[in-house]
Image: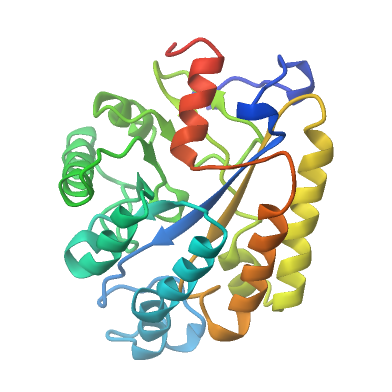
Length: 289
């Protein structure tokens, strides 16, 4: 079957998109704050033990993010007055409440990101998925004091029912479809797609391609520079997608800090969140459809 969730829309045929205060690029940090089950394989640095239960090597690598890496990232975000868009597994609320407290103190945006990063909706019936999503959204709302407005599936996964179910629960956008530099409307009333990136993503760049910190810095700068050129007549979105257990490693972090400094010091940049991007786009283009 062909995609029915959204229509084809070449970016060169759209009405110009304007960001607040005349900004050209809307920039947000997509900070993945996740919990992994110890009895299931997941993102791994060494595949030789990935199928073992338990797997101290790979589980410990991932666990570094919640214990150490996120606090290093938080210092950099604070330094450049950037609020994170937190892609939040709801189990984080139970297992790492100090992270929730830190985010609430900084007015971070909270985007629902599944129960944990070891469970996907694939194979769930509509009723099972709805109950699963209700539990996630309600848990995040209770812990953060704010009902999430956006969704990123674990490993960017959805079912054909996910966007409509999310709309029923009051969410307004998804980040799973990395196919544009601007938000666009889905063929689900009231739902948007907001740009995320699987390319400008530390999992892809470091774990997938084994790039160095200086290469990461250059790629972030190149991404921004090209989007800035593209945005001369119509605004663009730049998402920098991060995982504390990867970019939060000491030997990488200095290059993330330099990348954030590069963007924060450029004119014509709206340092924002995915929530605010969705809200502005929705208002600028006529509200819910």
